[in-house]
Length: 222
Picture (cartoon, rainbow, N blue to C red):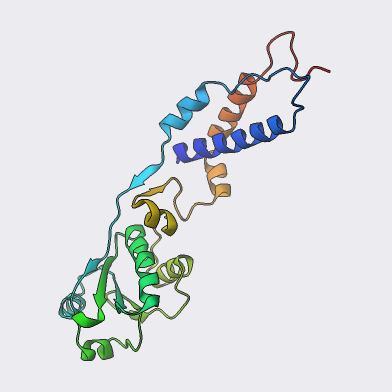
């Protein structure tokens, strides 16, 4: 993740530079030279990774029966049972859509109450809405935890052993209709710094060299 590490270093250094500038006296000082041009080049080479949304497939109850009866080898399924009249269902649906994009390796289906028979809901233990069922070759688990994104991701990881391809902000998806991510979900900043230490040190060294004051000048005039 060299681009991600470089972007992280640039962001940290920009924050330090901004804080330093904010703490300098407004009058009676010599203006500090601007950041070196290479910072813009680094930023342009490390754009945000665009992720195409992968929405869940809206199906009828019989389709769910067919898919789960087949249970293709190695395949996992996540089904959201919801009701159009239920406000809790309305709140969970965009979160489930985000999960579908974060986990494209899992087949995501949504089933509205009116498109399935009561016997189907009974068969899968659905006694209220919304309800999420996660199924693979050998197990069928109904989710019973908090209906927020972080809790659901933890449930996915514990049940399937899979990690999401990236972290996605639900608010961003709802407001812009597009998704972006620069950091894999399962890599912390500390891990990135450890893996990309040489790159970070190189960037810091070049920046320190680049912001040296010109000969005969100082950062402040007394």
